Length: 478
Image 1: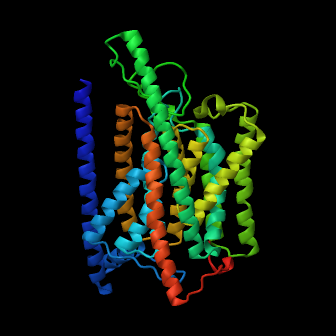
Image 2: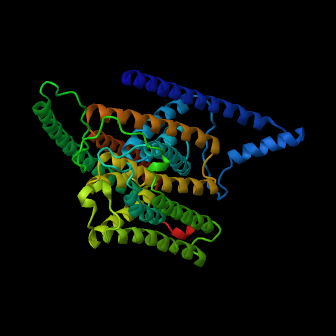
């Protein structure tokens, strides 16, 4: 019966995948036809034509700041087919590794589909948001593999996320000040370093899993005799254990039961506070007194929420349960280090125009957080930062809405498919280290793709004898 049910669920998943891809392509073709029809409408055809024309202009409105955006038309061709395929796999791998996939999206949008750099970054954030939201929804129904807690560590997210948001604001300002070649060099060094570190972490975890599986097999042989393979073992490498075996089938838990509402509410408060401050900044002059006041107001919001969580952890009122015994009795310097790492992850994410998951994923693994929890928590934190960026980019008119909607659908579908497949593989092979290897692979591919594009642009600037020094922050709206 379990096999029949699994086959039926697989058939339903396959059907949903095919249906969503078909709907996405129908959306592209229909949108293209509507856009062409809008362009043929004449202003003398009456109020209905005027309304349709206004709707088309709203969906394809461009930035009024004077920057010349390059927005290719939505038409069925090899560019959108290849871009869809790359975006699908990028979102699938990125969601599993907890890094979002921005390092794959941006080169794809620029080199294949043909968007300019700023628009590519904005649409990349939309895709990251779509993948993150669907992944979080998927993870909200899951429990920790070995502990009685959600797979998302809300206390860890509450400690890191507010500082991550503050770091992103700092990183965006640095992105304006630093020359492109500086960002490219930093990106290559950082990504190759983190991918290498994650790869060796995966190898270490793989070895631990092998030892654990051998020990478990020996225990089964001693206790069950010939019935050694009767039970399925699902270890969580590098993670805490409560020394009790769980059943193969986890009990079904509803989303409402799996959410820590107090922690979630505080994160939502931080999100709305930052969004309000960012919107208010759009109505001020860059480097004016009001501009700096609004920027500085981000500090008490982030520090206040993080300090509340840090004090609770220090006094033992809260624990980071996913770290097991290490998740209690925190010292001041440990909490300060975690907060500093959150700020650093945000700065790097804002500086490189990517989600903070490229830093948070490896960081959580180094802190001793199990791979499944690391991926789920990093994606949960990215959902807030990426969604806020999307709202800001929309208000600044940095991307065409139809293209963004289509690519968000692709990323959303890919994230669910990636999560489902990898989770089944982990259960089948009993190796959560697969997540770490996917994380390392995604970061490495991002380093090659983004680094290659950056080096190409840098060579072009050298040939044109373009200015390659620091920029003036006050010349740009950030």
